[in-house]
Amino acid sequence: MTPAGKILYDRSIEILNLLETTKNEVAEANYPKLRVGVSPIVGKIYLAKILTELSKEKLNHNIEITEAGSNDLSYKLENGEIDIALINSLSPINNNHCQSKLLRTNSVKLIVSKQHPLARFDSIDFSNLKDQKFITMNHGFIHRVLLDRYCQVAQTHPPVAYETDNISILLELVKENLGIALVTELAPKGENGIKTINITGVPTLNTYTFIQLRNDVHLTTIQQKILNIINRIKI
Image 1 (cartoon, rainbow, N blue to C red):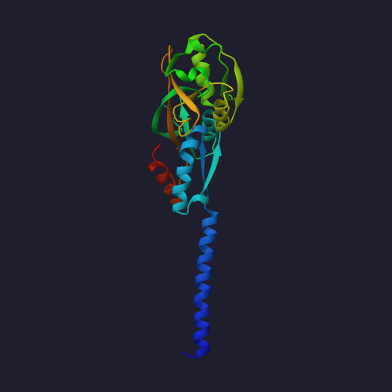
Image 2 (cartoon, one colour):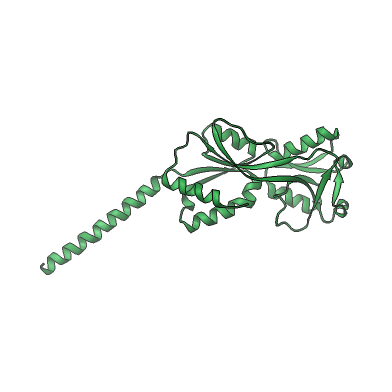
């Protein structure tokens, strides 16, 4: 091979490699992202772990996160706005349009600031909270449903001081001693300045954390890999 021919050959190899790399990058960019809906509490505990594992596999750009209340996410899932939902439910899910996998069962707790007079108790009858100011999530969130259920059973209606759609804000308001709140046991995990109290005097309510996948979703290889990673993570 002449020197000129060698240069031409080397350049051709470089161009072919560049074309292959570009083709792969374009193909990767065209892969539809896996649309995952995450409820506030599940997101608080679970989302960072998911994104960390996806980042290790260089898959963090192949996921699209929607954060909303569990009720809203169930609606979005059924209407095709998301592919997968990580949600909390007050009962086992039976939905013909989705596959559901139970991740964990959660108890319901009362949380108060460590500066609150109730912080000296480890358990309390819900009926004794009738004059306490509550902080809760907006309608569409499971925490609001929990408060409404307990109030209905105990036939008491304590005042609601604040409503929010952000669980972090709810926790901060409790820390600042601006009210108390009913939450699932995962919510105050890792939070300082909050006392968790068991609730008595009413039937025990649990919540259930599920991962749901719509039956009509046909996953690509990358999307299936993402789902496998999500399923492996323990909460």
